[in-house]
Length: 137
Image (cartoon, rainbow, N blue to C red):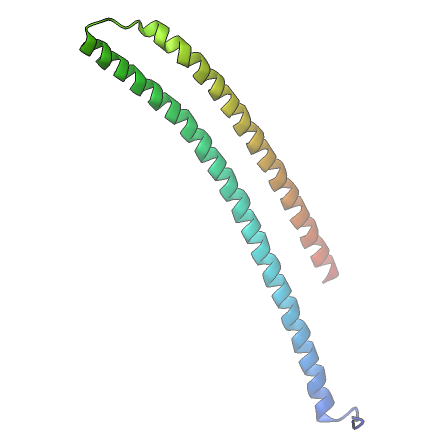
């Protein structure tokens, strides 16, 4: 291989090429870091919203079921001609529904608290990385 002189145009082109390559690699790394952050944020937010949706749906579904069962009991009693003691019917499933609601509420609070902690840890980590990146620049 030939020895290249410092004033040789090939040396200058190779140096420029190396600088551009390094710049492109840094930009690619920054873009991939931003993309990773956005995807992680979207997954955390989406997971939190999904948990909240299912918890709310469970609460509303149990109320709908209770109303529907009461209507069916009334219709059935009218068809049979017998009276239904609504107080006895509502206390049995009502207690179980209340216990289920309490457990679901506690689970939702726990999951939302966990999501909040993870989100705050992630934000603190990213802020620290951003501060380190700015200090290096």
